[in-house]
Length: 148
Image (cartoon, rainbow, N blue to C red):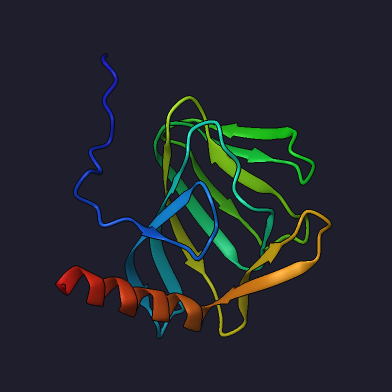
């Protein structure tokens, strides 16, 4: 069986503030049930900012390897293409990234009105948060930019 890359050239990737090595595209938001369907692209051989998941995250790796790292940058887990996980909220911060190629990962974030993600500095201090409303606003901006 030959390997194929997920064709994502036509996806209108967005940046999330000044977070490096990460792009996203929100597919849908179900405000009533508090579900965000989004795909993230993690740059190959890079790690994104330290963060903490404060909501249930279900993931499916579409392309590449989805790599998870300890707060200190040590490799913690490799999720190969086709991997599905369901991860409960956890207080342990981590980083994520791609393997030998960019990783494209579908996330279904099952949230609430509160904080869904905490963005941390290298000392573990919360420097930003992302809530359901933040994702709703990002989705509206993404939709508006697609129309232009």
